Length: 256
Length: 322
Image (cartoon, rainbow over all chains, first blue to last red; front, side, top):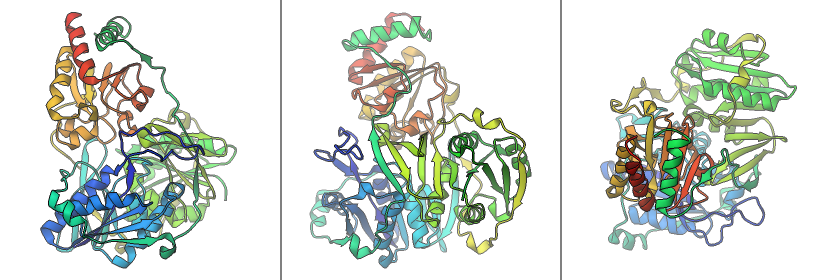
């Protein structure tokens, strides 16, 4: 099975995000970046399928130079090669624009399966996979926890709301967006890290892909969220704060 | 082009609350323009009759045997035809798992990007949604029409949509054939038997990534037993297998409405917050004063949960049994 995994590099969840000087995006200076966690689950699923059925896993990522680190991490975990779509203005593109870039990078590979995480941890649009399927003319399914190869294609387990699931059968080639938690994520081994250094990362430019279109939706402002409630903060030492809280819970909220 | 089309979603044979909330958002967008609603399925008479009580000029029964059960291919095909026939300026959806599965591709067929997960609408219109797991808010302005929008659960008041005159009901029969539906879904099934009904719990101690390691769980469990509370968690904790999936609170887990919800080390991504909206009192403990959980908390303690939780356990114990 030839599998392409589309991966995003996102600000590390423990790094402090600040609004940038333009007020239209975050300040990217001094940020730590990491592999988007749902995409890490998509990569894990791809590696498991390859171990079971053979084939090739290709990691794909769009972004500036720094995303090569994330692709190298995917290679160290076991991806065979990588494609880097060099793009310095990813945040200014809408979901359709980003999906077009990725879809054009995938098209010449003719994979049996395209996997990606269900959403990114920065924008959280949850659309890239579904739009790529549309652009590539592939059947798709979202929020997938398990993937099984059948004689005619795939059988997948899809998460529904409120603890329900369903299984879905579909032909290949196909695209799936992977929900987190279906598998246990692996770590890169020392040998894997060493091997990754010799694996190919092919770079393509936005111009090569010919997928340049103006955005249909503009992110024109980022701001701090409005508070929905006025939180009463309890200060002091942990002991003092705890005592104040228990006092409130007993005599004001009356839940104790 | 004019007007707003709302795509209602069926839940257990009725128009679900998310659909009515989308209708409320549509009212805000429509101004003096008219609103149409679409219900989709193999048999839609009952749904359409229910929808006709909404604020709509027209209810479209988009009906075809291939529209049940739901498939992304079927809904894309049918709604593409509806939108081409009706030419609305705005198409509004509830932001459900089902909508997430097909609406981005439907919008792409019109050369558009779905503005998803919307929590507010400003004049323009400009749509507000969360970024960075709720740590920032983004304002999005669509550049052309039709504009596709999905609204986050709980952001618009369903009650505001239900007052309306009786709408005209029309049948719309899309053209589609079996080979265009490429996926074969099974009947939905439950995961493991739900041994824990967090929805009925009066007190809940819930933990997130801040707990750092499964070995640290006892400090939360100690507090839960001192409070007589159930233990619960945000999704990552259950993904890691530190607590069973049935203890997960949020849009993919259980929805809770306790008297006391104590969230420790949970940053408060929107998927978690939608599951705890019904709580009477939310207490948040987090080392990051900017964590979005504090936007919904009644009481907050900024600090290290490894110090704060044991201190609360002690304080509860010395205050006597709850």
